[in-house]
Image 1 (tube, one colour):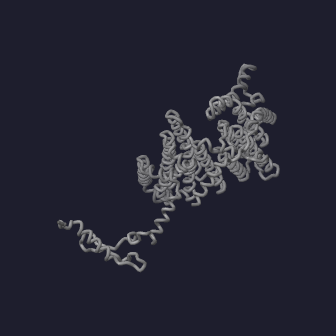
Image 2 (image 1 turned 120 degrees about the vertical axis):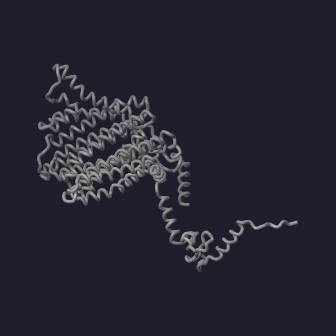
Image 3 (image 1 turned 90 degrees about the vertical axis):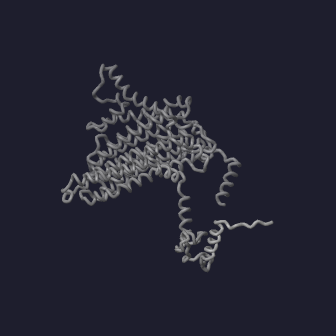
Length: 569
């Protein structure tokens, strides 16, 4: 016996939906016409179908836009997407952004009220720019680098980086994704302050180029600080070291903030900064090169030990030196002052001393993957061995590249002086003598640092701590030993500079920039002693010469072939 089923209330609705679907007019190609309508709420009122509903297969205009944006987002760094979603939803970003907006509005109201009624007649744009600069610089210098520091440090501390490491993302993409997320936050902060900058321009008293220069200074300094924060976050291996580095970063940010404020308020806003666009471009290029260097260093710190973590850094350092030499040469030519050459030599030597200190702490063991990329022929080994990983190769790279840069820069200054290209007054110490002194310091102090740190590195393993401690000891001994000799021989510290104080780098540099100048015999003495220390280090570099390229195993070749086929598919 068959039971009769009563129609459920939902059945009438289903039948109504089916009839409504049959009533939807279709075009010739089988798709629903744009005139199709639907009824909502059963009231009989007709509404047009949305365009996306009429094109479910995505063959129309909106489907093309959807596919194009999906392809575009797939090209973005996945770390950027993840970090952007997390950071833009965080309380820190919301509080910072709304505090920036509130501070900007408050400063605008205060500026108009306190300057009324003179604001209608007297230019006050430069005064208003001071407040907007402080608001923007504090947001950019303080919050963005600290957030970047905590982001990467948390990945390493909480163990989530291992989950990223097993993916196909390289260390460079991971670090650059976090850097790009910080840049995105900077752009959002800039977008909030742009109307205020336009308001300053309308108030007169400040030019558009000056406003652009101030914005560029804030942006490039924020980039450098953020990249530096990423490097410091990779050095932290525990809570104690993380706290110490975070405090050091905050202290450095405070120093940079006050220095930048003094420069902008005294030089940029009064428009007393003289220079050409090439000068500005070269200065910003030098700063941008440090951003690339810090990001690459952070990526090298977290990269697997089987990877070549040194060649990219050394290529960046080489390019940095070339940019610095061009910048100093242009500044000398534009101002007609050869003192720029000596200052460029000083900072270039200090730069290579700092870089060499960290390179001396690299691991001496090379993985098979790295050894498969070593130079094979005699010519390539002679030219490119120093670009490969290792403390000995790093030492020789710093020595060769640093000496070459110092010689080139000094040669440019000497040539321009003799040819009459630069007719200004010469420096207190001739360029050739100053360059000889800096080359001697580079060879001597860096070589002594390496010799002192080698036993500790062999016992404790690769680390930057041993070279750092060795550098502090060597620099301190270079200053204190001549003072001890003075007290021993004369009973007091001498107030007259002599060859005995050649190892005292602080007094020597002060003497070189004083009106007396550095004696030539002292510079030659420093160069000779530095060359002797270099000779001792060369004896210990035979291991780097014995390293040879190894063949690629058949298994690795097959893996590369399979990977290439999968990428093609």
